[in-house]
Length: 194
Image (cartoon, rainbow, N blue to C red):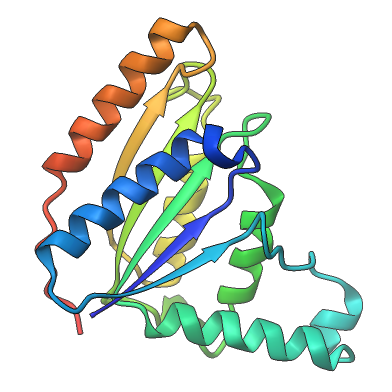
């Protein structure tokens, strides 16, 4: 089984989402013998944002890199995505990654009756964090966006672990992280995909 860990926080060791993705992956490794884990750190190795040259295929280096990112995603059975909220949205580095995996003809296609996702059968675990209290609020553009784009790609097996309010006070931060780490323990890792 292959697991792809995506980290997008710019905060390094201070990152809550990195702490959560590490805990999720460690738990999965303890349960699945021989788990093949690949880590894509979008802070350490960012993808360029889309450009005309990339979209038109005039940039051979970017095209090859984008193809490798797509193949890595397609090969994964489980994807763990760390997504902190920055200014009500997700990090632009994560959006650049999404732009490489949302590819017509590979992960979705258009039909006369509407779009069809082609990347189903994967399990996705979202590790989310926000400085304020946004869960279930109109101000949360991270989880709804990720669920929308993943659903568009055909992925319906999505679980969320989140720590909200980590910027409100040291006490809020500690409690939110403790609750999120506890929630990691409750994530059912039964996988019936590939």
